[in-house]
Amino acid sequence: MTKATTIKAATRENWIENTFPEWGTWLNEEIAAAQVPSKNFRIWWLGNTGIWLKTHEGTNLLIDLWNGTGKRTHGTGLMKEGHQMMRMAGVKALQPNLRQQPFVIDPYQMEDVDALLVSHIHSDHLDIHTAAAVLQNASPDTKFIGPKQVVETWIKWGVPKSRTIILRPGDEVTVKSTTIKALEAFDRTALLTVPADQKLAGNLPPEMDDLAINFFIKTSGGTLYHGADSHMANLFTKHGNDHDIDVELINYGENPRGISDKLTASDVLRSAEDLQVKVVIPLHYDIWTNFAADPNEIMYLWRMKRESLQYQFHPFIWQVGGSYTYPADQDRFKYHHDRGFKDAFENDPDLPFSSFL
Image (cartoon, rainbow, N blue to C red):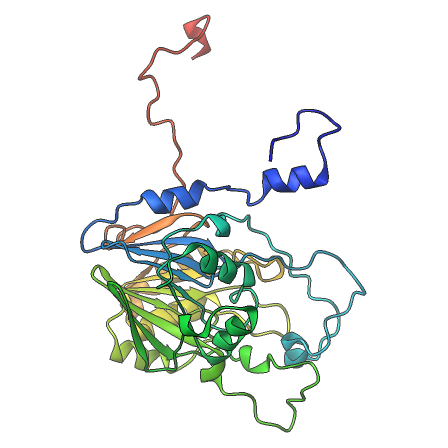
């Protein structure tokens, strides 16, 4: 759509069409053009726990991309009946979870997705626009991979059953140059996510393995552990014993009063130690206004503890829309977007006086 150049043409529809997604196809183009060095893999942070993984061989995995929003109106001021947070803490007041990050990728311009992986059933991970965009633009060989209830939701939306793969902990599937293994998830909030008319008090919760899984991904350049929305769990240690993990992605956030839904800064470090990773990258703290957290707290605690506890890993603090290449970026601690102006003064400036400089 053409941008408005007159007041008459400046409509709400014109604004939306010319503004969202805020990054347009910038990141789509960057990912498509990226050449991953041999014996490396590259990941891009798409917001929340959304990740694009690209291998040296050109395999592209899309994980947990969410293209939705949080609260958009105060409404009645009350939480949706049966919401998992209502069940967790007996709350009724509306959760003020507004989205605070821009949309950095255009889902309907995504190309070359070899598999869409979704970790669990929550709508900020299992997204209908992501599924539709992948189905419309990807090849007929592209797979939709997730736990049982995720796959059932895809099929209900219209994804052909033949394109889906259900994984339970211990299952493996090969997608081109990658091997994807499902591991146990520890997302206890997912266990509280049931139909509004279903009572959990006095009843057994649903089975975690049908709702959520963590992903262990092997590439020719190293391995990635995607912990999605898992809570802190002792079984991280077994995952670390059983698998050689290079990079961990894990949720992090400042839990509101009475709520335990995200890992704390100390939990992030503890999970990395248990998993015996080389690099831990916190995610999810970026997206919700009411769970927003400062990842510098993780760096502070890591510096305080690393000598006494002999940490063999370090954190990496990312920015949404940025990339991380492993192992090329293994020694980096913080990300900054390209600052540009690399060609400064390669051409003569157009100034009336040099004193402007």
